[in-house]
Image 1 (tube, one colour):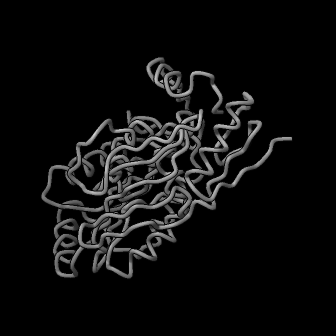
Image 2: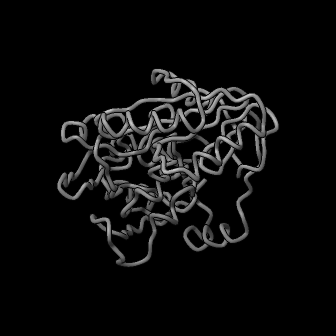
Length: 295
């Protein structure tokens, strides 16, 4: 039977991995499939919040909803909005993002620094607490999308954004591939600054505008003139996230060939799409975990 471990600190996590390495036990992070299942749910503290700098430092087990509730008291947010309320560590390890990726980027764009524990128990940190930081190797970006195969993410420094005063959604019906792509190109080439542009094919294009009430009103009106459509309540984004949750595959956007969600150059599909671990990624993994102890 696999044993479960729920460390409460970086040192405890390092001890777990060090002991497992000494016994040549395989370790999986927040999922089954190894001799030791290491869970991050007790690493759930907000360690620092520098409201004036729009940054915070958190442990990997903090859930996005918990963090954003705390940040909202200061009129700020972490602009990550994937479905199902994952932890910060899961967002980094699985490279998760949601509709706001269009404006704010993916988790790698919001990550200022990380502290990780390698398979032998070594603790390593890189980056810092400020937006403009070039100290050391950028482990954070390397760990984005690593799926727990390089090491355990225990802490993260994050870039924040002001909480918008207003948010409104424009939904544009699309009837054909050419119309859908024409609308996408029109929005991309315009002076519009939407927070999200998601194409829920084959039915509609959803545009989210956020900011001051006056700016949002102007953007919404300009968007209507360019691509038509009508305003809908935020439930449109619930539908988008529900579709993303059902999707089992993701690939670079190459065309429209059935129900899919198109976002920021990627397509989410309701079928499995192979995403092989590349030879280069395998070389990096071997450098971080030469014994292959991380499952």
